[in-house]
Amino acid sequence: MKRIFPASVLFAFLAVMSTASRAADAPATNAPTPTLEQRVAGLEAYLANSDPTAPLKDKDGKIPTGLTTPSVGVPGPGANAWQMTSAALVLFMTLPGLALFYGGLVRKKNVLSVLAQCFFITGMVTILWYVCGYSLVFHSGKPFIGNLDFAFLKGVDSTPNTDYSYWVSQNVYSMYQLMFAIITPALIIGAIAERMKFAAICVFMTLWMFVVYFPQAHMIWGIDGFMNGVFNEHAGIHAIDFAGGTVVHMTSGWSALILCLILGKRIGFGKEPMPPHSMVLCMVGTGMLWVGWYGFNAGSAVGADVIAANAFTTTTLATAVASFVWPMAEWITRGKPSVLGFCSGAVAGLVVITPACGFVTPKGAMAIGVAAGLIPWFFCYKVKGWFGYDDALDTFGVHAIGGSSCPRNL
View 1: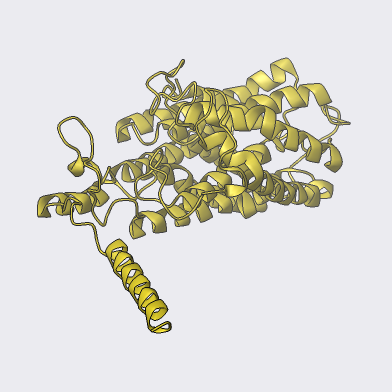
View 2: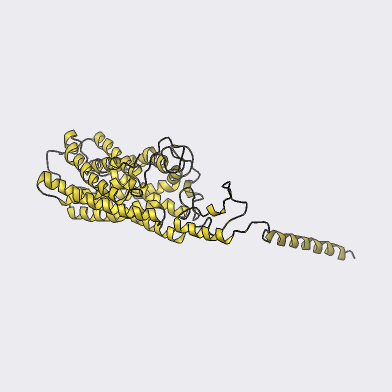
């Protein structure tokens, strides 16, 4: 009897625990079940690149507790595929596109230096982006800078961040935006080519990311940014920058002008010829930039939807027109067009259409192409000579002026 009683108590305890465990594991019976219409509407939201939770909301805009569908909170395979492709295309713009473009324009002795600078910036910016850059730009915080909750990509996984996309994984989105952060400081190299030591460039570019890029990108693209006219209804300035006219081109271009003025002119500037090392490399690099720019512009729709299609179309039209207008302006003023004119016109067209490509019509894109072929050309051909600044590869004339010329920036 002494042994039977403890055994009975133990058996009863195990039976109670087993029952409790099964009860805990049992599915909740009071969770609402989505209707067939709600489930279908969630799938249709994927096709429209829209909010899959919208069909679940009641008349007050609230979702009943526990109500969900399989399409909520998961990435869309097609959207992810397009975004990863776009990220690769934007990286292709820097390595090797921009490296070859700039490498062909400098003198032979400086080619390797330019290539090394592009590689350094790629590595340095990636490290900063992982440590804190992505968080400072794309986490909510203050109007001028985000907080550090995403530092070291903490919590940045394959679940979509619905502040920016309903169907693209946040880790994919962060890598896509990283490519923008890489090419922006790389553009500055064009203005100070052939006269700044590598160590000085390393220090300057690192500081520039914190002082200029991270705050500016958050203000324009951050969910609560001071200038985010798309997502933040309380923005102080309602800017519309679809793919980086302000964040990428204006910041790099105007910074390039200031830096080249501080550094002064290259030794021998204006006294001896400084022809490009290889227009072949320049033309190849331009072609790579054009191809990669489809990821830059159409990819900024964050989904393979109708906006991406419009961006793809308008980017093609504006770029082609500008690549024609610039050398024609050379032909009229100088007596013949040049390969550099074709290349510069193409890049100018890409720059100027960037902030507006998702919104303008094909007719608007054609007009922007004409403006892109004439306004930056005038600054590179006339204004630079009037003021005498040594913008070695016309970063200011093309990117700052081009980026500032598009009417959809502000």
